[in-house]
Each structure stands twice: as C-alpha cells, then as structure tokens.
Length: 290
Image (cartoon, rainbow, N blue to C red; front, side):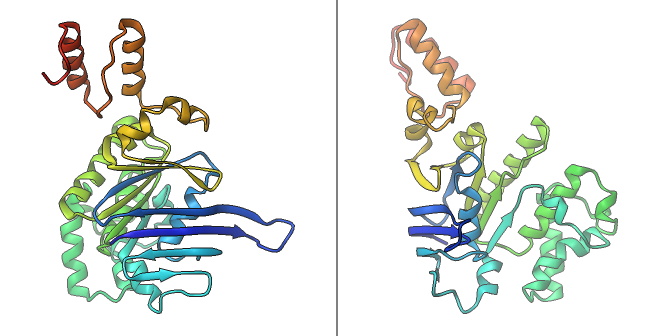
C-alpha cells in the first residue's frame, strides 16, 4: 500500500489558548513495499504522523491517502476497521498492552477483533510464532510469566497476526540491550524482505536507519526538514547538526579518514569490511571498487 501525505497540518486543541501545531504542511510519498525511516527529536511530529496512518487522528488540513483509503478533516473512510486491519502499529514498549490470560489468546485478539475465522487465526499463529522467536510450549502460559523480551515478541506477534500490509514500528527496540536491538531489527527486516510489505520505522537510531531503510525523512518542529535515500541524507553532516542530529558512525569514520589522509571515500552504506577494503584501495592509490 502506498502512503501519501499532501500538505498535511495537524493542530492539537485548536481555537484554544493551548493550541499546538504538531504538523505543518507536510508532504511526502512512500511507495508500496518501501522501508522508510522517520527521524526527529521529541516534539518533531513523529508520533502525530504515525497516528494518521491508521486513522487515530485526521488532518486539520490537507489530505492523507493510505492505499485506497483517504482521510481529510471532513472525511474518513467508511470502513475504518478495514484500514486498521491493514495498518499494523508496534508502539514503544508494546508489551505494556498485553492483557489476556494466555499467550495464544493475546496473539489471537487482533485477528478476532477483525473478524478473522477461528481456523485461520490458528493457522496464522502457527505461522507467526517461529518468525518472532517464540515456541509452541509458550502458547498456554501467561504472557506475564515470560521474560521482557519474550513479552515484546508476543505483543509483536499479535500485530503481525492481523497480516498488515503496512507495518509501523515506533521505536521498536526501546529498552532492549544491544544484542536484543539487533535481533529485533533483523527480525523486522527479514519479514519486510520476505513479505514485501511497506515498513515505516520511527527511530532515534541513525545506525538502524542507515542499515535498513531505503528512504529517510527527517522531521523538525512538525515540518519536513530533509528527505532522500540514506546516502544523500546522512552525508549532509552540517545540515543534520543544525537540528541536533548526528551522522551514523560510518560517516563519522569516513570524515575522520578524509581529514587525516586528505583522501575522500564516498559513503555508500558500506560495512566495516567493505570500508576496510575501500581504505586499502585508496592507500594503494586506487579508486574504491577498482
């Protein structure tokens, strides 16, 4: 499903002394099947943006189009339930939303709410639990008896069991240790690759954005500050620093190398091994990739 924002503004508590413009004439498009990272500090409008994706809020002005669904200040889709079945949102600390008595019931809650037949729900659960790193033995246990990491995987399985065409990830690795963060992001990226679904990652992590996204949108005070592929966006160190954002570690390393050796190695999202090979080529007097 494509995502299109056309001059979208959103104001909290309009026409009151407490009015706050969270988004201002925001326009962008995300083609179906893309992996887009949305980056910005607290207050930049990220949370308000993702609430538009499944109709939790509607624009104060402008237009949001999600596939065939259209939202404006005066219009909402006739079948909001269908929209929300096709846009799955993994919020920060999703494990806080668990409430059922067993893991299986918690995973089944979403598809049941969207009127999926019981037999199909069982098939979906059986398919999704190995994908998120859970096992059949856990299905009859209380989710509150599991580890924190397992609880998060149960909550994520509940979102994925609705079979969303758009998956929205709101800081999905918050609170996890580095190993857990890597495992979680690799899991999401693997699913994105296999299922060709549109994935929207809201993150503070430049490293995750540069590793997984094919498109990046930087928000600042409710407006679109920068947009482009990761190579374009993260190479603009000074522009990012103006909004208190840093560049990925690899970009910092390549900048330091250039400053010390007066030799430029273009940033192309290379791995450490690839960067080492680039450096070797440069020091031999060759152009990287030769």
